[in-house]
Image (cartoon, rainbow, N blue to C red; front, side, top):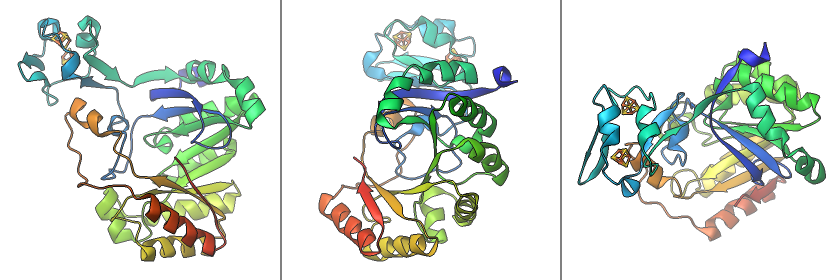
Length: 302
Ligand code: SF4
Ligand code: SF4
């Protein structure tokens, strides 16, 4: 029963123009098997809803401290502190926090609930050639949910796009691909040892999955985050371009590095692991030129 399948969703973003063709609604799912050093969505990493705190919004009323039976939250002059070893992410403190200094990120939603939301913009999809994108986090960690959502979209003639880091089980791909119109497939680095250092996992399974999707005939656009000094040397770009040519892939989107997610690390009591990195427009254009020199279609996604 589709009604029984629930996903852990942390955002449903309408009018999205960077997550596939046309105007789209992107459903962001929680849980990711990789830990990329540059991750700009730390709230997507854990596969369950979790509490965040914004110290600047806190008025120090103390209501969260009163209500938490586990004594997992405290407040002092420096801000709000959550003992994450004790906190169960029950959300009771969020309910009493009037200024919304405490928030719960992510919630369990049924396929019907998510479909109701994404179907509201169907007319925009139709006029723009858009649709619905499942992103994350990693959608392949919730394959039954994504497959059921995509099936409903397809039944309503809505284009479906899977945005994946590629690190998923083949069984998950078997569930999702039959209802997928397009795959946006991330490649962070072609060298497996470096991939392991940058993301916590080697890339063999990712490339096996990429070949499997190619075999299945689902259209693919490669997406490559461009992290200055980590994966954007001419040598690294050339190796990726050659790998794409070898696999007969045609199109790549370059995803410029940004720091928009930095504030969220503090709200979740996590550490941003990447050093000081600055984006270079000139380097992005140089990389684009290399991909084009291999006969590949290449866009820089803003
Ligand atoms: S309930 Fe909210 S505003 Fe009050 S002390 Fe706790 S975090 Fe701060
Ligand atoms: S989410 Fe629950 S356990 Fe965690 S601090 Fe709030 S009330 Fe306590």
